[in-house]
Length: 183
Ligand code: IMP
Ligand code: MG
Image (cartoon, rainbow, N blue to C red; front, top):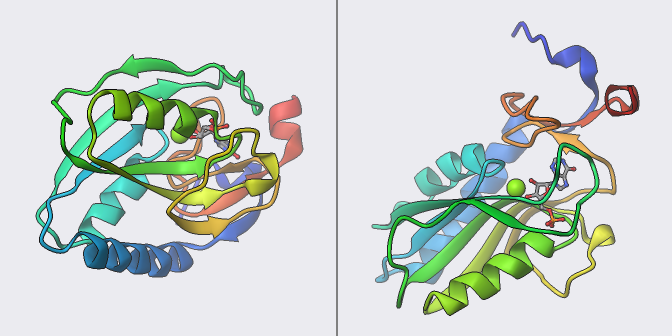
């Protein structure tokens, strides 16, 4: 496929096929866990939108879909530590079994904040699903219930993940060439 972004990618870390195979397994695990229930899949925008689309289709349960948009990165590759809600929940989550869908668990700031926030909003249970996990960078005591892939401490893009709002439509997970973000 022709791609304008390809020249900025240093290497492919996770291929499209590997993504789909693993997401099938995650969907299956969620199916087992929530059989007979009606979970609310809650995607953390923007990064999770591609993963969310594949994950809900990999889990053929009756469920609902919701989004929240937050930001912690101000167009940089390191977290500012602060989490801001840019677009809030549009429905009552009291008593709901939430499946939080994240693109990547890095410092843990975002998910630590969101977990507290959803509990104060009355969620009955919270299951955290992250496509990628960078445990080496964690500063908050938070773990995912389900994680797709562990990744090394490198800045990754694609499959929803961006650098300065770009590369979200790259179909695989790749590592960006350092010169792209160091100028
Ligand atoms: P955390 O709050 O530090 O755990 O990270 C939260 C957010 O930072 C993630 O949801 C991503 O949107 C973004 N992020 C962290 N690491 C990367 C990366 O390697 N590439 C792109 N975005 C990242
Ligand atoms: Mg994100």
